[in-house]
Image (cartoon, rainbow, N blue to C red):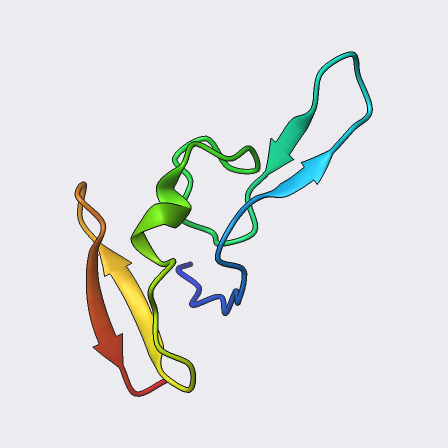
Length: 66
């Protein structure tokens, strides 16, 4: 079953539990979820008050009504 999940993060969450920091994805775009792979750069300039989905291997941004 597919889900539409709303995430509002526009960057990773830094977790310092080891000798080096671990970055956890907060945007939902990472291909290595739950770990950050830098995909949040695609959503960093999203305007407030709008909803988007990201499609395809290049994460093309599409505005949606829900």
